[in-house]
Length: 116
Length: 111
Image (cartoon, rainbow over all chains, first blue to last red; front, side, top):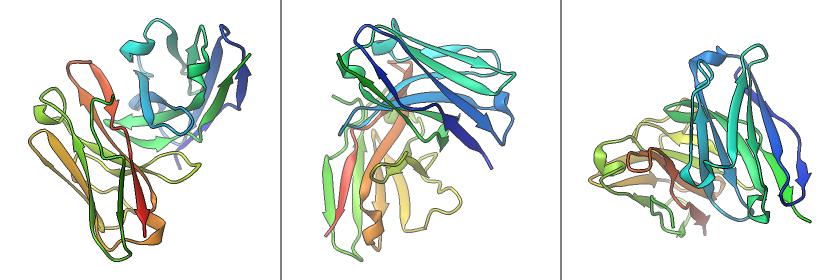
């Protein structure tokens, strides 16, 4: 079975950075793109960006382009999402989701809380 | 303000049929780009419900169906069941933004 297992909950102060991991198994890592999606408390889904695990190319949402970095480690079949200069508005659950055009498998989510 | 517009809420009695609309523009749905739908139960990750506008993944009941016309797409749920109470999101690519977008989400209440 395909599994996406994300790292645990994080608590950060404003201005800090957070790096969330998404370890994959059960499929060929480089054959599928990976998206990152976040959901603020009580709000809808927000697309953050996409990474191609094969070559590492990325495309980020305009709103986050100057603060987000997505990377991958092909040796461990893991993708990472790092968000810098955290603000209280970045408090959300962060999801990785495998893409075959549509998002067919999702990670369990990583809660990130930004508070002073 | 989402690029894809959904009604905030819909409701229906058990056994009834409801539809959820997703209105876009010429840079996404109207450009012929596929629409996908996800169901999110409380405190869980979203689950793929419909892909490529009309296709159901294995395991999704045929009570769920998708369609598209012009710049809008719709998700129809027939034979409503209590377990269908959830939030539903549409999803597509937007060529003007050069990125993916979600609808704002629709909360379905089964009366």
